[in-house]
Amino acid sequence: MKSKIIDIVIIGAGPSGSVAAGYLEKQNASVMILEKQEFPRFTIGESLIPRCMDNFEEAGFLEVLKTEGYQKKFGARFIRNNQIAEFDFSKKFGTGWDWTWQVPRAHFDKILTDDLISRGVEIRFNTEVVSAEYNGEMWKITTSNDKGDAEEIFCKFIIDASGNGRVLAKQLNLEAPPKIHDHSSIFTHIYESRRPKGIEGELISFEVLNAKTWFWYIPFSNGKSSLGFVGPNSWFDTFKGNTQEVFKNMLLETRYYQGRFDDDTMDFPPVKFNNISRNVKRTHGKGFALTGNAAEFLDPVFSSGVAFATETGLLAASLAFKEINGGNINWDLEYSDYINKGVNVFSTYVKEWYSGKLQEIFFHPEPDPQIKEQICSVLAGYVWNSKNPFVRNHARILDNLYELISRSKIV
Image (cartoon, rainbow, N blue to C red; front, side, top):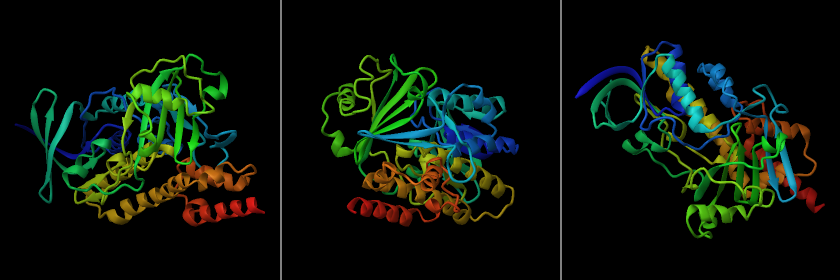
């Protein structure tokens, strides 16, 4: 069996792993990515938020991504019956990026890995991690590729960015109950034959079907669009048939978009993910860190997935590099506590979205401009900015605002 020694091994070549590798390449670190699949490959998580842009820039990807002509995303629109709430990222509290992209992930992720390869990063595609054992100083990773060849790779640190593969979470028994229970998703891509010109055909939209169920529309610059539904399992259980039949019947439940996609052909039979939320007991340990969906995934309603993936990938890479070069890292404080601050903010917003409180705040007919700017900053992913009261006091302030709105209705 062949063997190799490397400083840091990254499992997974999605945005989290790629950003980690991009940062490490800039430090001239010894790094390798192990990826189970061949790229390009389909995956979900196509709507970014502005915080991602900071991370792409630090990892050295921003300029190459700007050349790809992806659909720019300047905000988000929420629709409920005849009510529309729009958030413009240029009108947010604090500093930060005013725009980001909507991306077909198969193409987007391959652009990242192609750039890494051009920068000299070794990526082993079609390579599965069979086992990972730690002896207190080094990891021994046993891999198998698509040809059946086995190899042992020895490293000082593992960054697990394996997404839904959740390699170390499974091997080290780190799975934990999710924060959001019993929600599933179904989605597909179409080529829009009747896409409206202008902003209507460019803007990401979320249509509320009921308090706990919603539909997404994400248009790409290549003429295709991503369509999907998220809701409780009990709602999904009311639909019968194959996924294509189910999806068409779900589209009949929409109001704003009903009929718009009737003449469009699906690129692939709709894919269903059951119980989409994920969680772990801990996000790091001796010689490893979990990033992105390999650690935790809340819910797609505010498009936070890639933001947390890139945030955790970048931070884990920075801390791991310091540690293997003799630095004394407090992983609880510098990694877990930091990440949990952001996760807790978004957890509150997701929870109150499904409780209905946040929806009432969003669709208030006369929103306060200052409050809207502060909430917009959260939606843009700047969930570590403690100067923002809707970050600093996220749970209490949403409750108080909802109560104020409720009392005004009674009066």
